[in-house]
Amino acid sequence: MSEVEEKKTKYGVFILRRDNRHISVIETEEYDKAYEVWEELNEAWIKSLKDNIPLKLTTPIVTAFDPGLIFEINLNPVVETTASRNANPYHQKMQKEGFSNSFGSNGILDGGYS
Image (cartoon, rainbow, N blue to C red):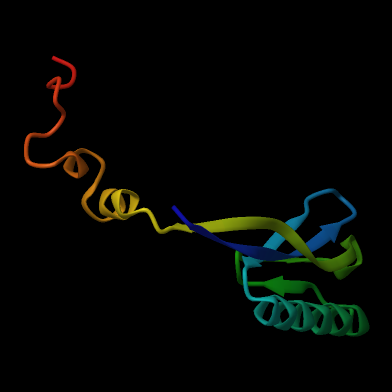
């Protein structure tokens, strides 16, 4: 039977701190969304350094800290996943109805565990 594979890459935006308490801000399959978050963080970091005020985050955690603790904000590919769509009709039935229902009306022939 044929199987179709799709490769998807997840991207992460990370704040790397000098005290090794790094923050994973977002992980997404949408590069543009990750880049947008990176841009916002970078601008906030520059402004915090310039104005000598704490950098405030509200997602994924609520915190405020000295912007001098940051040594890098980066956007990296985190993991590449493979999503396969199996064209096998038995596999599709199992996905739709569940494993035990894919055996027909009699269920598992040996009765399963007692």
